[in-house]
Length: 442
Ligand SMILES: [Fe+2]
Image 1 (cartoon, protein in one colour):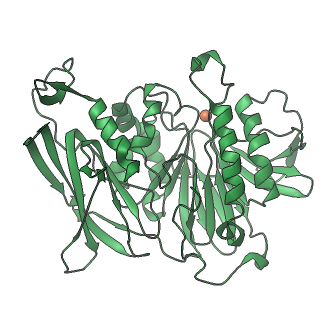
Image 2 (image 1 turned 45 degrees about the vertical axis):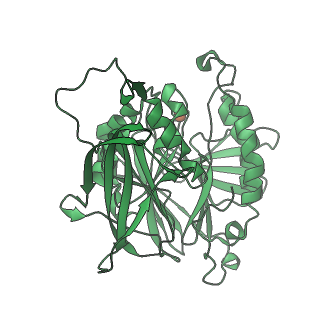
Image 3 (image 1 turned 60 degrees about the vertical axis):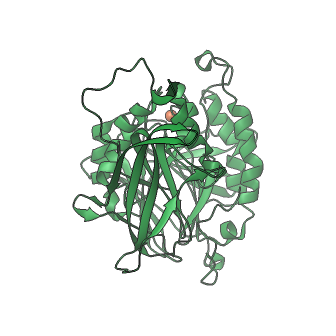
């Protein structure tokens, strides 16, 4: 349960002891009307075939639990709590892991929080206790990912930059509730100093529209690494590995979420000498080299990578980039002299591993321009879709192809792109995903 240690830290960091009573920081006057204890409704994180982390926020320190059971079951519900070092977690971010779930099963659940006003030796003062069982008049529920799925869809949204209305529009335009998950590919929020603003500018829209029943993955862009709250961001978006880079599988697809870091050099004045992203990107190289040796990677029908910042072309390996236009014609880029440091780092540190190991697709954002590309190195070719800051991408996966449809905020098609399977030879026997969905490489 060590991974929950941060939860405790965040909660306590926002509290001060006063006369033996935990209270909000004295600079904040007591509100005339007490806020509801549940600050948000739940959102699903780190979903897999067997587990999920149900996450929500409370307006005051609380400890929490989840009751859950398969839909339609008349058995008493199972109960899950969160504790660290034997102590139940008390804080403002509630994260309850449900493990040992069955694949492809729908579960109904309720969330409960009990306010903790005071902890002293042998003396405890509790406040309100609140339970939420429904959302929009229906029981809270989710369905674990199936063991096998030949055909499914997911959504990529990126570069919202605090755009609340744009977010709501793109959720509708890409029909998120009928997809299996959303990958937010960076720069969703801009340079945040406090968690309140993550809720206001991003989370509220997600929890209001779909996030209690469908999971999302939050990848960092270069703007999630700025501002004081960048150091607490993981508290809001837990992963199975406690890292921002990790893998997961859905059906026949092996997904890799890379963490791009900043776009400028570490010594740039914008970062005040407080970043270390060259080392951080280097740290991902041996991890990535292990990932591509996994049987699950080798046997996957498709290998899909996410990285907010797209790689530059050129470099020692002389990577060429073809821009594919709407009419199918190509323009080959050869001049990368104006590439930024982050783009070159990703080209030099990540791209060769993707090309060497026949990645099928790289999905990026960052440029605020829609670019349909192919990166080529000799006979190696990597399809890359760089989405704009105004559109969303609905991706349909089937045995025949990965089909990407970029749509605008009205749901109108902007472009499409497809990727075919590398070879029928990579297909392997069923039940190969027995361990799928677990954190495959720590
Ligand atoms: Fe960016």
